[in-house]
Amino acid sequence: MAIRTVDPAAEDQLLSVEELRARLWEVGEERYHHRHPFHQLMHEGRLDRGQLQAWALNRYYYQSRIPIKDAIILSRSEDPAFRRVWLKRVLDHDGDATTDGGIKRWLKLAVATGLDADRVARREEVLPATRYAVNEYLNLVKNRTLLEAVASSLTELFSRDLISLRMERLREHYPWLSGGLDYFEERLHQAPEDAQFAFNYVFQHAHTRSEQELVIQALRDKCDILWAQLDALYFAYVQPGWPPPGAFQVEAS
Image (cartoon, rainbow, N blue to C red):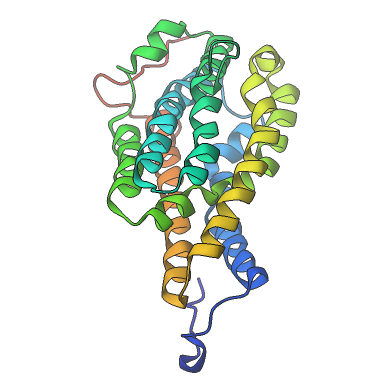
């Protein structure tokens, strides 16, 4: 990987909106989890039902923490206008009196893999490394600046393309999952809208070049958290295939 060097004369110059967007997309192209071998196996149709079950069960832990993450961010803002917009993210995942949220939609996907919804929702069989990585995301939004917390959500800049590809490949290779893809259908329009708001926020509130670099680093760190979750899945359920005690065990077919 090439090491980026910054001209000292340019270190104090703010990146333009186009330059900041380009830097963020550069992070996504290099580090977003669309490149992970586990996802590549999924998109090639090379995962079996048990491996997809392990993915759905472990990813549920991440999904269940997303509204908690967003509630932490809400609690850190003094701006009512920001909070009104960000609250939408909590409702998108938790749902409301009239609409199911993303958490219930993800459970529907898990059920389509053959798992029991209550078993998944209990979160008892999550890999320790999954739990650790996801909890670290909560620590990031709690302990770093609000600017960095918002910036960490910018993986949504890249998610629409991955979601579109994933839906196409799941329908192609795993047609028995087709009835459980409602979560992805909703995210196709939710994620780009959320990403645009977050990008506008960080561009407007990163007042120095150093703060812009913090934005970029927060995105790298979020990509690492997503990647680490897939590392755990790959190690436990692909190669060498060593799920730890207490974690989900694939049933022999």
